[in-house]
Image (cartoon, rainbow, N blue to C red; front, side, top):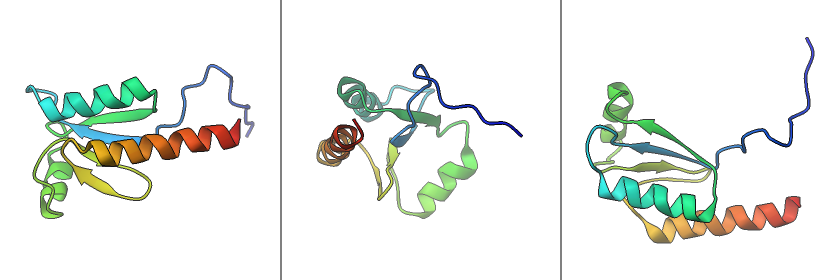
Length: 99
């Protein structure tokens, strides 16, 4: 088995996972993604509609609105600028340390 070193053009590792509504307009989902895009923070999105079992699991955990954002330390639902700002700040600080 061989391994290759990551190239400089390789996609950055996502910092956040954002579960969104994709088949309907979700103002909070769009605001969350826009804030992350503006900050340049890498994230990955998944569709709640296309994953009914995961959607049900989130509901069982008490998450009732989209988006549902998962970070390394916590999970929340809805557009939460304070939590996003904290994640952005942490990510930027980590980028400075690794540079």
